[in-house]
Image 1 (tube, rainbow, N blue to C red):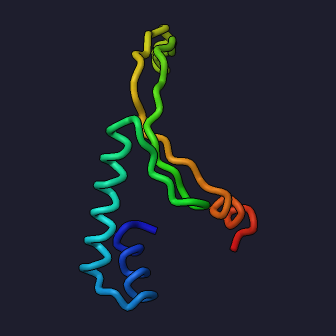
Image 2: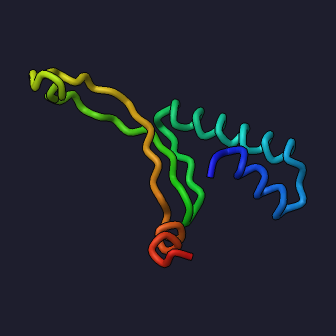
Length: 94
């Protein structure tokens, strides 16, 4: 499901206009991005998802084409974790 399909589904199920649903989703994306960018906060929707910034230490890697060893620099990254309710739904297939 892509964003357009998600907006359509939410609008159909809730009776809220597609424009309003799109506005809410766009604002959620902005807020989640702001929280992750700060690095000292997490955005948690209990039982569903958790968004946070994580740090990846520098490490050695390999160039897949040449096999040459390269140094991968340290970097911050976004981390999204599934909550218990979402994990249970995935396992049950419902």
